[in-house]
Image 1 (cartoon, chains in turn blue, red):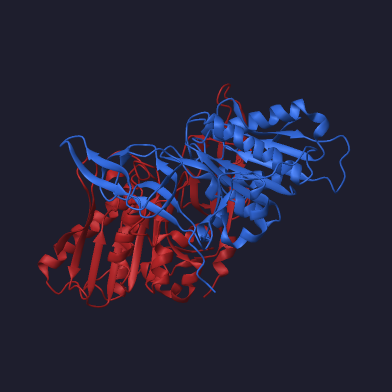
Image 2 (cartoon, rainbow over the protein chains, first blue to last red):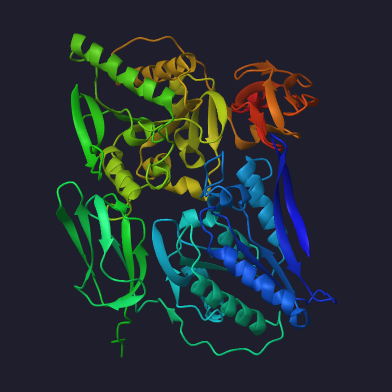
Length: 317
Length: 317
């Protein structure tokens, strides 16, 4: 059932509406589990649209399997999605830095507050992002170290390529995921693909993973599949960042999602005017190349690649 | 005066971004003060204030070599690239430099800019940031001090502005320049005024006068000024946010700085297609208008005005 969860009138003959599609069993009790699938917070990230479509399509075709509530929110920033605008249009702010929001603040903060209010009470939430227009990401779940023990077992059910456990950062306390985890909704952040594009294979794979998670937690009745491909970044495997030290045009040499060796060439920064190579980028470790620069123009400092180091052998006795 | 390039960032096709500083007095002496101009490329008032300050200090130092008694560093802007394009934030990825502090010199471009700026500005007794508000408002000039700076709130009175706003800290504040100055033991202040994208000389000159008054009172310059206001302390609950209940064409009836009384009409909203009057916004309290929505089309539930309530006049240190 498609429901409107927030409305606000715009100045000229239009209403901004947040919608969700709710799938639920006929009998709902206090023990009925509920999950919210949220995406479209950044208007330039479209990968989640396809996942919402595939998930809704499956649920429409398999209503008899639905034992819990599945809420699908494809567009948390509707004007952003329809105008390739990452932030909240007109206000030019990142909606995902304004949670949990406030009804007495400006419109983006009111929208954030409305999202939290409508998702509140869900047992689980999945917040799907697509990097941005600059980087291509292997599908991954990102979890703050402070919530790792609780969330890793859940994330593993998605059978996603890897789970990145990162240090807690204060500024990330203003994200949707932090806001929801703080009020008891176990929330996973998925990053995959690249901004302004849809990578069908990633969408299909994540949808299968979400269905698997739903089966695990009893929201749908379906055989649970064994999970096989997840790697978890932990104390034994570091994530290395490769940033540009020169401004220019980045030409990658390696494909995304490959294993690289320490010292292997990742790409070059070139100068179209002089015809010179300004910098050659080298892998700092052996590992999985899970992030690669998609947009070629770079400044000094632009992120070019991220590599998940191969696990180190535990030398402790 | 010593004019210096504090740091540079190269670009693929543009001339390098050069962040300039103008140093007065003797480097390394006390008392010392750094004044940093806008990081947003639409904060014209703040650019005016900073550049006029350089002019003022230069002229007086030329006339009297002992005019500056300690050391003053003025950095008129950190973001010339965005000023030259009429953009708020960093041109390539639209990131806000003022959410990157204390910065990271091996990180993304705006993290590197933040790190280099912070390195040049983190060891002054007093640190002043000139800011325009990031939301769509026009506001009276005021001093903002974060809650963690309450121990030096008395120093904020040296500016002589009517209002000193004590800001409740949010996770986003922990990555701002003023917060990090504060952590590094500078007495840090934001001076906020005006409206983005336009020069309001009247308001800007009040801020200019306030900085000169501050420098006099802190014995940084040998000069005389008139006394300013005692400085009313405004806590977060002392502000009444007045929202529009309708959307449409916004016709303002009251200006920033106006004293208003309970029941006074502040603005009217008309239907943008048929011209019907759909709301008259009424003041719910007595007070002074500190901020006003600055665009002629207004959303439903937008904050149309902020009023400093008269009852806050009872605040004492």
